[in-house]
Length: 322
Ligand code: ADP
Ligand code: MG
Image (cartoon, rainbow, N blue to C red; front, side, top):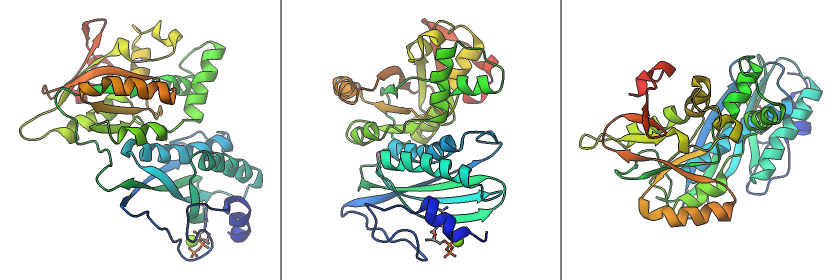
């Protein structure tokens, strides 16, 4: 791309606050604080797969970073640095201006420095790598859920999937509900303050990107051993969602949005029952709903209950979780 350097200068070079040497050299230089480990994660977004070709570039910019920051939250890591590799079909300056504004609004909200990347011509695709710090031994992994742990969820679920359903033309909603759902889909809020607080509280944690059942089953699998095959019981009616969604809880498409809809970027975590008081105080402190939705058991299966009755989820295509 001929104007590559001026594009990088104009749209992607901003002052840094956590970085020894940022954009412009052959490599960036970082200093990880003493006693910390480097947490690193990467996520790629491709047009047609992760967003529609006509999606607002501001939203693409925000979300491509936000979903990466969410992975830091899920580990209990503090996000600090990001790289951005982007393939663009052409140097559309209006698109780039809006994209970089969305990206940096998210970066500034979480004090993340953009420290490098790559810019090339091609089908629109964006790869972000996020790096953060976590005190040695304090990261919250997926693999340490304990028998008898409560299963918790932050915020509410289903909105992003319902917003997507609307854009795909198979979900009808009232106007104000729709705007909440589209905001969840386009402007996810990574739960960093929660993730940092959970270092001392949670036994395991994951962010909900693929849907609650899929992501919780990652915790169950990672936490199982030859002597203990972890399972879980979840109460669908306890999972927070919009009131108008709750009113339709018997509808399979609504159950699907809550249980299998991805893109919510809330945290699902497990903690010992003696952490309940601490967690309800934390919810108040963070002004963020934290809700107990189930328990870790030794069944090796994921079972759902709706109003005290077992819910058969096979018709929703969840057989592979059983
Ligand atoms: P090199 O040829 O050494 O790979 P580049 O010409 O690709 O360097 O990039 C020049 C500088 O700009 C590097 O510091 C690189 O990290 C940075 N950079 C390139 N593209 C981006 C981008 N999309 N966002 C942030 N930094 C970028
Ligand atoms: Mg390069």
